[in-house]
Amino acid sequence: MDIKAESDAARSSANAVPQRSKIFSFFSFEVCMFLAAAIIFSVHVYLKNADEKLLNEGVAVRGVITDKITKMKTANKGKDGYFYEHMLHYRFNYYFREYTGSNIVNQRLADKVNKGDTILIAVDGDNPERSRIKSSDVTTGFIFTLKLISIVPLVLGIISLVVTLIQKLREKKKYLTIQP
Image (tube, rainbow, N blue to C red):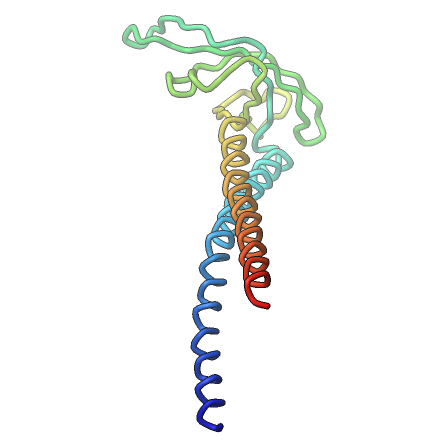
């Protein structure tokens, strides 16, 4: 009788190990997806906070593009120049200021810029009344891409988690109906 009890205990412990590894393998994909979403979202939040810090320190301002890029010939060896007009309304060291101007950008940025987009522009901090635009970058495209990329693994993780739980419930129901 002791031998039978020992063999039953050994059999049940041998069956328990694969179940634990199955549970781990079921949830490892979901955990990876949630971690990927969290990492990408944290990068997005970090960039957004860094953007806001630049704006609050007066190093950079945010403007809105009011006109689409126009292609013109520049004096620089006959190359094409891409110009966009922008309107800035920003606070710089407690001075409220509006600025309308145009910037020249290269072909890569010209393809990304559209009317109504937001741009981040660095200004000259020596004299806020006569700040001139030094450089600009398009912020909306990259931040929107980060949001989209962080949503994809989150959705995949949730769908996979729901499918896994439904499969487990079906297996449990099937197991309960087979045994009397």
